[in-house]
Length: 221
Ligand code: TMP
Image (cartoon, rainbow, N blue to C red; front, side):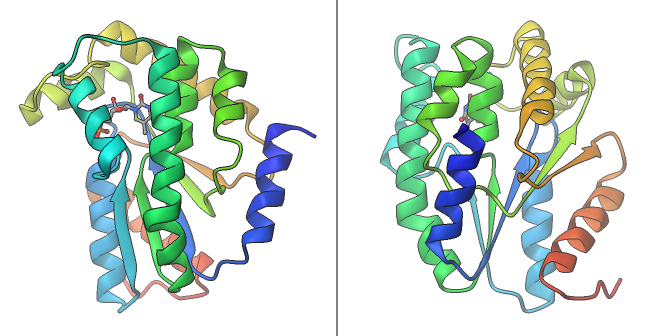
């Protein structure tokens, strides 16, 4: 059985009610902005949601953010792959499953596709995939596809602190990694590729409409 089949089976066994949405893309693709916009729009429809992110704000996620911002001596892709997978397993138990069971829409800014694209471009991607095989599949993932040079310009404009994967060469490699990941995902995996160069409002409207459709609700915009 392939990894993707494993995931489909384990998600079928969990019997959750809510809806699990993920935003993915290279650094500067706009996942954080779009995740927040979706949460705000759903609130306007009085739809309960839980906005979250990876690395998480839980203990393993905090350690990961310290590593990403250079607070510790650099580590390797193997260690990062294990830590991100552990943070994710903990994220599912602490936050994602309880919110889904409460019938909420969970919106995660990044999930296992990030591990496959980032760590999987330095480590054996199949091994990274195995580490994540128990992670429930999202009901829909929006992949914001943005040119790495455009994303680099946006990151500079944001004036945020330098992080581990910020170099243009790394982002080119990760962008290539995402292309391979999107191509090789199981057909059961619901991933929508969006042109991330469109205006923020156009993208938000598309993401909202698509999420509402999964909920059986009409877009009122
Ligand atoms: P962000 O919060 O600015 O998106 O930063 C998170 C960074 O961590 C970003 O560079 C992507 C990276 N990352 C991985 O390398 N692997 C993962 O599994 C996740 C969730 C994030």
